[in-house]
Image (tube, rainbow, N blue to C red; front, side):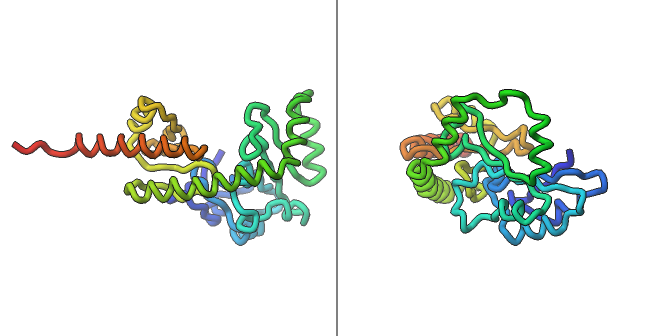
Length: 240
């Protein structure tokens, strides 16, 4: 595995291309990316696809795509339809709400789909998950409600973080990557708010907070403000 750095959480297509060698078989990206919440534009995706050698495939993980306006996101499926070396993966565990059922789908050229099918485990998804997936794909009302809630609340949370002077990477997904001291994760947990530490992602001075219901987001913002205030009080010098 060859990791590609993302300074400031942004994609740099050149960083991917300069790491490709004759040994490279697959380039994987997430759009939106986890945990930064950043996306690859149509222009950047074209640049990446056109820059890859014929022996290299591009796999695009679009698990969080339903939180982004489709017009503002690169159309990865169109590149599959054009016959390019592109594979697209999508999940129903995010905006569709089927996290516990572990189901999603992929779109790829026929020869790749057949190769994957030969390697998959028998009964790799259960009947209940498949029935729920079909129903979820038809539930436009739920998807629209989820999108609207996330768009409004994501903007509210990021606006409040900015007001508090907290650095973060602007997100297009249903979470925000916040720069903060590692001990804030435990301190928020003691306040009853669970956020995800990012040390194992190579960002020990960050945590990721999910965008939930309005009341949940308010709880996080209030708890985080209290933790920040406590930290400022502790750091103040005591004058005699």
